Image (cartoon, rainbow, N blue to C red; front, side, top):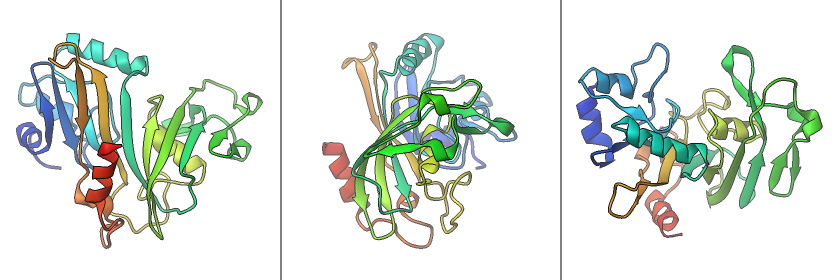
Length: 253
């Protein structure tokens, strides 16, 4: 994406004050730290602006991303992510129709060859009991693993797709993508896990974030980033006929 920071900040601005700036990031541009790619932090730095990412979303993921403008604000915000008090919600499209109305994926993650995130156990040891996916501790692979939990609610169904509202209780790298892929429901268009083809992008969107913000009059940040039209389209056909109605319903629940 060939554009400058100021243009991006104006086009995708969600909220800004003296301590933070939040953007509705399009899919296809990195937040920070991607090799061989220009990212948002670098673009801002090229224009003399220092940003501190409070959290990260993948390059292929669209949606809400929050930056601090100074280290004091950054420390207070990132501690909420570390303590798991930050409330994050993502929209997900899967090319499946048999997911339950609600579910919990409680599967530890590890890092394998080529720095790839995976479930820290053989795939065939994953057990489903109703709406819960787990593995026994005795089945964990040798090496370091990271407890990881994703909760989801089904918010829409079509004859080809299920749309989920996912809440990552932990915030591991690639967590939602790996969790859904390893239980057999990869995110539509995910270049790592979905081999079906037919999608123009990865259908994962950072929808909302709620954190404490003591410097603000209401003492909190409650942010929402509306997904673009590309999220509800394969690129050649609509995924959902009335996405505005779905988003309105989610906002009021």
